[in-house]
Length: 164
Image (tube, rainbow, N blue to C red; front, side, top):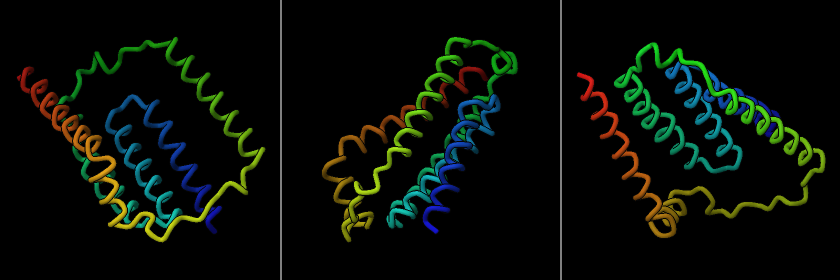
């Protein structure tokens, strides 16, 4: 059953990730990113980290995606900018890197690493372990990301206000 869930979640994550980077409509790309974040929460559930899965859905798929959609709607890029075509070198490089990744992933799966897994501790994914890691080991990174999000939101508001 876990294998079937993993395959379904993997397919959802890959397809939604491809839609995020290839679709021209920003709203559809943002909604595909939300689907990708929900698939990631499913992976956390498969790892028996229910608290992390809940945080993933509430914080990222919920709050951050609402913020991203709000900024996209606030900026509402003009049609001539959206319709501009280009980036042949980037598209070719992206396709080549994606193909290399798929080949390497296939080789890793074919080689197999069934004996390399280890059981998770009883504290893995609990509120206490996440809180300890967040406010001790990753405190500065957490604060830097929160400041980056505030700066991005202020920048989006200033850009939108300049046009009015």
